[in-house]
Structure formats: structure tokens, C-alpha cells
Length: 167
Image 1 (cartoon, rainbow, N blue to C red):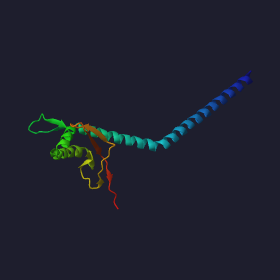
Image 2 (image 1 turned 120 degrees about the vertical axis):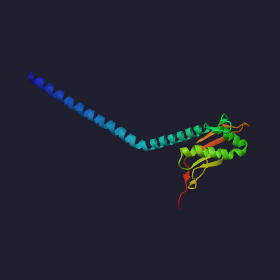
Image 3 (image 1 turned 90 degrees about the horizontal axis):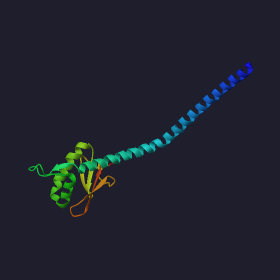
Image 4 (image 1 turned 180 degrees about the vertical axis):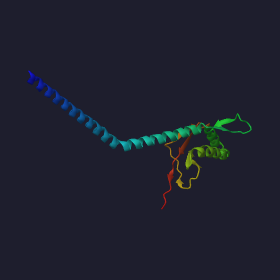
């Protein structure tokens, strides 16, 4: 009877050893599988994520910029309009150009330290020093504003224009 119990103990301990080996291989396989997957997809996913964050930030900044209040007449403090309203006024009357440039400079230069290109229907307004950059209007960060004459004004922002390459 005692031989049977000894064989049973040996069999139970062999099953335990096989179970530990199986669990070790399983853990190794899972770590290997997820480690290879994260290395191969990490660069592309981080680039996509960075691009989406940059695009979201630029669209949010443009949206907030267009909603920024501006006092049109300093003698009348209740004459508050938004930047988008000022753009509509500038589109119909070019005498508002200096005022629009000043407002865009004061708002965007506080947010950005480098060159920013703000475009209204391909008319560029450059903020900060842009002599080292190629100013161009990009329509990937753009919004549309309805005009008083039932026309559409396209407004876009390029917060990171291409730098001029040195020769």
C-alpha cells in the first residue's frame, strides 16, 4: 500500500512541475507576442497620434480665435463683436484691414512665439517674424464663415509653416 502512495506522490509532483513549465512558457509567449506587436506598431501609432493632436490643437485654436470678442468702437464698450464678424466687415470694407491685423497680431502673438500664417480666402496675415519661413495657406486647418452677401469665406491657420532651407 505504501508503494502506491509513493507512486502517487511522485505523479502529483510531476504534474506540478509540468504545470509550472506550461505556465512559464505561456507567460513567455504572451510577453513575446505583446512585445513584438508594440515595437512594430509603436512608431506609426505615435506619429498618427501626434498628427491628430496637432490637428485638433490647430482646429481648436482657430475656432477659439474666431470666437474671440473684440470691441469695435472704443467709445461704445457695448459694440463688442467677434473676430469672425471683423473678418466679415473686412471682406465688405477694406478699411478694417489695419484693425484686423492688429487684433490678429495681439491674439496670436500671445499664443505663439514663432511664425503663424493666418489666411482669409488666400490673403495672408503673418504674425511674428516669418522671414525664415515659407508662408503658405493650408486648408487642413480651415473653417468656413458665411458672409453677409451669402458667400462663404474660408479662414485657415498654419501654426507651423515650412522653414526656409539654408544652402
